[in-house]
Amino acid sequence: MKILSTEKKNAVLGSMIKIIDQNRDKILAANKADLDAFTKDDQALYDRLVVDQKKIDGMIAAVQQVKDQEDPVGKTISTRTLDNGLEINNRTAPFGTIMIIYESRPDVTIEAAVLAFKANSKILLKGGKEAVNSNKELVHCWHLALEENDLSKDWIELFTLNREETQAFLKNPSEKLDLIVPRGGERLIAFVKEHAQCAVLISGRGNNFAYVAEDADWELAKKVILNAKTHKISACNALDKILVDQNLPDFEAKLQDLAKTLSESKVALLAEETVLSQVSGAEAIPSEDTWYEEFLAMKAVIGKVQNLDEAIERINKYSGGHSATILTSDKEKAAKFMERVDSAAVYHNASTRFTDGGQMGVGAELAISTDKLHHRGPLGLEQLVTNKYFVFGNGQIRD
Image 1 (cartoon, rainbow, N blue to C red):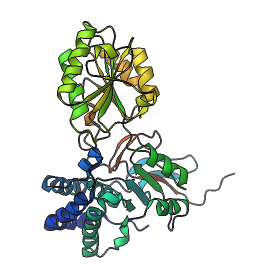
Image 2 (tube, rainbow, N blue to C red; image 1 turned 90 degrees about the vertical axis):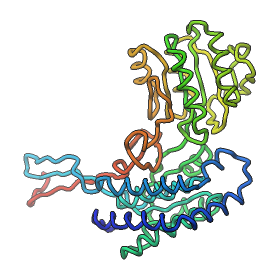
Image 3 (cartoon, rainbow, N blue to C red; image 1 turned 180 degrees about the vertical axis):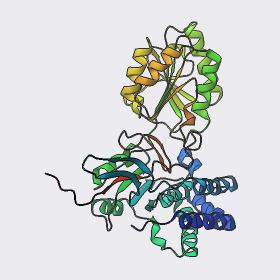
Image 4 (cartoon, rainbow, N blue to C red; image 1 turned 30 degrees about the vertical axis):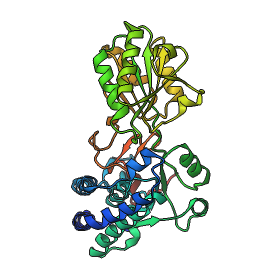
């Protein structure tokens, strides 16, 4: 793949900022067509589908932010000269062709493409059918920006394949794929992993936990839990499970207080058998499968643990490996929790809602990776490259 200059890439992004701003009415009209066709049976999916003026402002800001960032391609990671005179440079390099599969959110069409393009990779956008009109209009904007700068529209392509066509493409792609990023639930991830013939970077599954230790500041804990659960239920960094230490002073009264606080914010509660009688209005957990479930809804589970070790064990067993928080006044206890919990982001006395590229200073993100290979956490511009060794010699041979 041709390596574009930083100036050329930034010129395209400058054009894109102008074109999005000029085409606000067309973008909103396309999104209205998608919203009108949506049945609203999935509130979280509907929330992610909505595009308004604020969301367009956010798209423009994302492009500007990436434009302002340093070009991640060709940066020297390390250099050394061996005893035999070979000079070995390890440098960042483009992935090549990236495919992202996602549902609803039209802003992903902007954020994923701007990151891939600045990282000198081609991107194939496989959005959900519920956002087809919005995505077509946004990709049209991309194509105008590319053509305005004498580049092929092939850098950014939109796929509108159905499930069967997507499966066939993954099994036998018409072009070489270097990386696939499925952003969605367990079924989508399993589908891609089953059929893909290249590397797959897992993203999107939340099922995040909060552990309230026996020495937690109770008012602080309630504030954090309420924000993590209710601030944005459609986000993969939203809270789903709450584990309360049985040694918390006034345990039963505080469970009732927590249940009241969540219920007043219209959160439906499930509780395990050990605390069901102490959580007013809660229903029993139907099966162990509930502990593995990401809700994306105004719903939460409350459970009881004996100590920090049990909390860590249960989180590592059931969570999606995305985010977890401990509410405690003990820094040593927090350090143990943060070191041992196997999640991409771990928090002390803070909401899981901060697991986000913009909030963490990464900028626009392609996804939140829960994989351990390559990169974990927000996948921003700096992380959207691979590496290559450049070895310079003058006739060296290996004996």
